[in-house]
Image 1 (cartoon, rainbow, N blue to C red):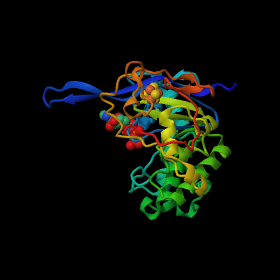
Image 2 (image 1 turned 135 degrees about the vertical axis):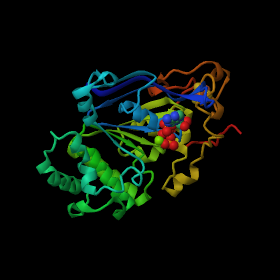
Image 3 (image 1 turned 120 degrees about the vertical axis):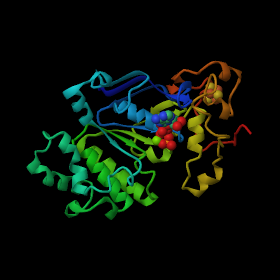
Length: 340
Ligand SMILES: Nc1ncnc2c1ncn2[C@@H]1O[C@H](COP(=O)(O)OP(=O)(O)OP(=O)(O)O)[C@@H](O)[C@H]1O
Ligand code: SF4
Ligand SMILES: [Mg+2]
């Protein structure tokens, strides 16, 4: 079996909540990421899916070493990334790149596309000496499906989808091994989303990239993901292969997310019953006791309030699920359920 290139173990990131201006007191903590364990193998895609505020972006910032964790470990090729300094830190930063959600705000409007895509070479001049940079940038523009002659244009002269392609070219410039894609298509029109997803798929094959692909909708990550981790209030609640998560999900939260995915076939649409998630995601400052999903779960029993379910292999399908009553269920669910 191939060794993972990235190993994230029991990762925790809490932000203090303070009160007072002169005498600041910590009155609690936002438990943005609360004990996440995931791994990524070379060349694969791990989809990370969950509702807004569940900690996806925080997880991506910490595992890229852009923020320090409260506790836990992230190892890149066997080395703890938070202990890296100097040349080793620079090397790690080169290998793990980020594509952000919003192509409008993530690119400096005063820089030309050539400068934006070539900027990483300023920090890593060994990858492209000055004389080669223009050529390299033009090559990158071509690779992501943009016209190399547009090298002197500014971001506002491109459409949203084209701007996201610029962001992808920039992430690709240093030939990284891993790209963390934090909702890279959610700000784009549906037709453009498909084009950008196809581009990411092609680049993965051509350059042997591994992706951590973050989304709030299970349908977005399906075709690209080898494995999927479903996140709720700072924790992974179910993880498995694409088949296990989409065909035989065992956690009620995954089942509810899947039941909300639109079905194109009218016949299936008629038989499909929706599991309605009632209420909002609880505050990560004060999450519910026991199972964090219990306030919205139609299967909740007494034990769910007192005992936190571990993320372990459960049910007949044997993939990790954090539910005391995990059981496989088809996606086109047979009855409507809810807690109201
Ligand atoms: N710097 C910070 N200081 C305090 N709280 C923060 C900070 N960054 C994030 N949070 C909080 O941590 C929680 C998780 O936020 P995060 O942005 O990681 O969620 P997300 O899953 O990426 O959401 P979205 O889908 O909306 O992008 C939220 O409650 C957020 O308010
Ligand atoms: S442990 Fe209980 S509350 Fe949590 S998902 Fe399972 S049934 Fe629902
Ligand atoms: Mg986010």
